[in-house]
Length: 367
Ligand SMILES: Nc1ncnc2c1ncn2[C@@H]1O[C@H](COP(=O)(O)OP(=O)(O)O)[C@@H](O)[C@H]1O
Ligand SMILES: [Mg+2]
Image (cartoon, rainbow, N blue to C red; front, side, top):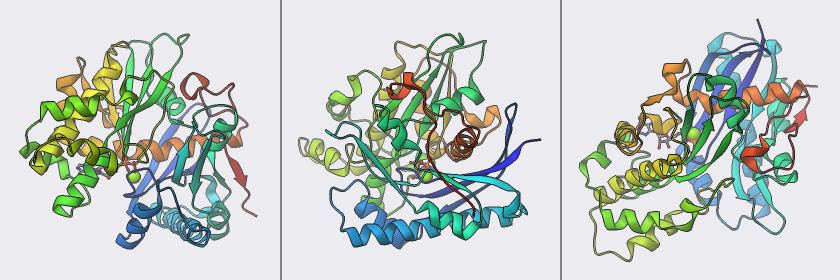
């Protein structure tokens, strides 16, 4: 059928790397294998310290870039080994990299993803496409989100208006109108796992709230939810993108200071409500017929229930449409690498605000 491509995705949750082996052609897309590798605790600590922070020493940056490049290379090789596919059969790897900083509103807008692609190419002997976001920023866009074009290719339907919600560290939405002449809209909604993970790590020393069980034990604090939702980001119109540098622990702690002691599980429940309520707010105008959820947050059953409560449409995970929630983002970067090598654009100007469609990424040849 098609050619093999690998997608490597390390998102803002700083949880690990999703690696997907996909078979792609102009007519078809299928995931053939998936491997998730959590970051070792030390590397995760380092990433938590420096990603989205304002400062990093150049020597630390250089080493982290190299270490992550090696790590991504190893993840790609492990994926191929478990799938029984030799590297020579893979056309290219699309590596998103780890976002270190994202500032589309700076006086000279920029976005920085690290994880040395040269190293991945050297280790695997496979061509690497990386640095997808910078070209969109150079064309006047936000550099994010980039997955909506892939969402369109996979999930758009002529029968109904659909919305795709990715619950990563940040929640982002893609609105897919059934009328193909209407523009696709996509934007970052606000915080999802980034704050849920921070809060449970701080109180229970756990990396995440498995299935949302801890949040379920808590109770919504309506005044806190109202205060958090009053942040101007939520009401700002698209295109817009954000990250954990904005919806940071300091952001949450700033609001919590205004309240008397709230039980930690109540804060967790309120954070889950914040994600669901901000998604519902973002869907108010579009009124999709269906909401498809992907990303690691799709495992948070409590959050899924809240989404169904807050949004007035059926809520399903992407699994119902043939692709597991945790595979979607990595699959998107395999697909974007395919687009780049085919000389096709990868961004949607209606989503990112870029002046035009551009071919994304830099190509690091196999040899
Ligand atoms: N079983 C689970 N229950 C609840 N949340 C989960 C579960 N598994 C993963 N997650 C959440 O998903 C996150 C990872 O999602 P992911 O889509 O990889 O986000 P990102 O793209 O930001 O890295 C974890 O940090 C965690 O918050
Ligand atoms: Mg992740």
